[in-house]
Length: 352
Length: 149
Image (cartoon, rainbow over all chains, first blue to last red; front, side, top):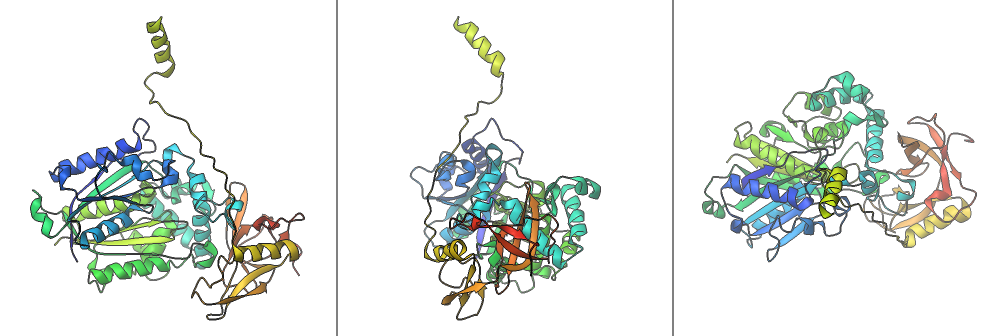
């Protein structure tokens, strides 16, 4: 299995994108993507987008970007999941043999809504929602459970967030305690923005004026129990399953040796550690230290900029750029979504 | 006159991007379903917390969402679990203390709130039932350290 990554484009990720609507955010990255790839839109056979209806404030939120993806008269579909899952869907469309190329796009504009109300709506209305929990609550409960097992996690989390944000440890420690034990700087930084990727089958590469910047050689995704209480929050089994599928597809036996760089989507500094452990890059309890060794989210990841539902695609763009600029021979991109990261997608990118 | 109006408008709004205000408020009336119905009625009528114990893997889930075990999808039967349990995780957020509580006899945790501020992870707590119970998760007012046997 081998799918060509023909190009990527990302907007800036900012606290506000007032002055542009969703469609314009998306339109601009598609224009950049086409220009960088030196192709016209005609080359796109189908589109898969990722966005959140509740964040957009309208159902069927892919209609908000219909013009940007020239959706009329084209096979266009949406995943109401993180953008990394859209890459997997697009890859499967190409692998089906029905499409030779696919545009993948994700957009986020959380600045224009009450985002805590949006994440609150992800909880089941029967048992949980009447208590008014949010994503912050779920992630903080996860951090609390981990802290009970690893007393040093609090101190290591501050170090990790300081590295991710380019701040001092005392700046992180002094940031607002949002949901104990998590401070503001230990949470992903919610941002507006959009990103897009152009994928092609091996056969279709000849139709492009430029060579692929990277190859997608493996993908896997999985989910686990929705109820927080039915999960071991300190052991994300769905990420284990997703990564094992991706590694198996990419014929990777020893991920620690065969993958140079990791671009993962974590909503908290504690998740940065947990995810490295779940994917097998660190032993249990060693995830924070593995992160601090480097090669993981070197641009700060979601702690620095988190366009919700687009973050995983942003990580994929970053991983593809690492390959294109010869900084990695093989890189992993990861996306997650759901309450305390219920679901995960893992993508493997290579140079050849 | 028109030019004057335009000038006044510009003074008021300047170059700020135009935004449309909106609010979505959609009332729902969700059927809780057969399994949660039984759980919620036992809270209301008996002040008892029920779980579903799997006949296959023997794990007990609280609160149950469907009649099947969420771990192995085996057949499950109703059992009463304890009204007390252990706090496995907690967070203070927006003036509330949320917690995951593993009740005695349960293999999963219940998401709820704590009513005392001096509770830590690992502490034992017990359910405090609301006086007026309607068949809702709020029939448990919260969990407290007080009154533990």
